[in-house]
Length: 139
Image (tube, rainbow, N blue to C red):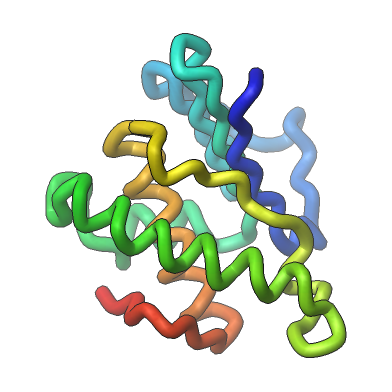
């Protein structure tokens, strides 16, 4: 796959696949606090491993369809850029929070679901770890 979006942040507690329940949602797979979406035709993959993220998506985040795809894409462009700048400055930003860059190409149409989950990950991340980004991430 040539375009990867990996979000593997703070995987301090890796849950055993054997002890957790999997449920398939089309190309999406949710394993308690692991969310994976893949699309082989577009050659992308997004993986979010974060304790509490699945609960956040199901109980706090605005439902799918609340935001337009254009809104999510615009937010993600700025959020990914700022996040990646923080990854490149481990002396300034906590390297335990900002582990690796996110490969998000603004000229690629990743579809609604990827943009929705990525945006909500930033909302979750900023709330859970008390991090502020220059682009407002409110719910």
